[in-house]
Length: 590
Image (cartoon, rainbow, N blue to C red; front, side, top):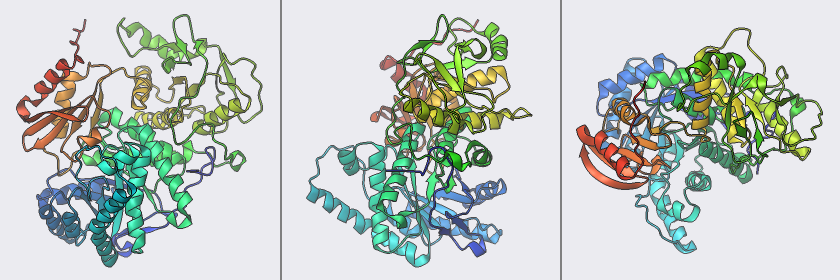
């Protein structure tokens, strides 16, 4: 199976075109040779027509090309008529997506008014009970027949009205039937989506795209790679477009880095026809991140056909860190083997930050680049290396983008039968003018994150960010976002939408204020039952909107406390963390 032609040479995946509305009247064409489309989602109650219209206009004003609106009930779906009418009256022709979960009847109402219907196969025709059941082949076939009966009316309406569809599976929200046969796995996500795609094709409906979203960038990357490989195996006419996104990425730097890792690495491999950066912030903040990310892809990808090699130096469908021997970076720090991935800084950064480091600080330089015994290699040339305990990196000035160069280095080491530890760099060719912080963050996230997701890298060096303290913090944040190290509390926070039962930004800030010192603890903050409990993925604790002004608390995916008044819920979450011995007291600062 293959998901791209070469891991070293950029070729955009050839997809069919799908039509989101009428292109002659404000519609959008996705796929083919068309530019990647930027989209987002409004956050207000769908029954609030004025707010829905204004938030949509605000998104369009910053460059959003498709706007998604939740339709949790038939009543909400019916109000899409009013929202769309108001937008068109204001000469706003942006295509609207209705986000559907659980209620096929809401989809059949929404399809009358909007250009796209998004369905989640995990909950469109199923109720999730986390039940464990063995299905015989006959029982499984019966379940598929039941799903087809529920889904077919929507397919036929989409075809009749010339609507588009997004078949979007989410990690953690798979049906019990899929979970019991495939587990909570990338394969389960792919098979769940393909079941719905087969139904579409049975009725000669092809105006749809896929998405495979997870809050874990490495899982998300594996899912999309596997999906595209499966589509390739099914035949040339399975070339449907792909929507990319890391769901529940969170806010601030963390949300941007997770999105850069997941979305950026796939864009660099030629996948993706439309994207959304999901941030727990006001939606218009998402579009500039999309724009920055897309602007970097030509620079971060190789277009020289001399390096068009089809051999992968890693398994693209199952994450496994590259095996290396353990070596000493200096007198106190080792890397490789079972060691943590280490953070290296330049001498200039060390001189600026070292005096400020306190004994118990987790964010600290672990080695100085100029002091390392590191063999710098030009992977475009032949080289010899006689010792596996030699740290290696790509030589500065090599005329290749960093991702390509480090993949090529790993491949050549593999051919030589060597497993030398590798020091990753976010850039090997320096800009004459320092990068802006927002660009430096995304570039480092894409480059280092993509390589870490490939299983490559034993130490990392961030130099694109010119601020000493910022570059050090960025390195650690990338390692945390990639799931390689944990130096602080990890938050999985969904972006707000009309289903949200509390103010996500305010509550997230309150929870962070009480818990951000809990190193290694993962907390999910979910606005409604759709995004929890399943989509909390591997979180230790969950804070989930259960009803207006009421919160449910989870340990893992298990609900523990129900209908807690919102005013008490943050402290009750703290109590729950203490009950499970995950709490430590915050040490006073000097």
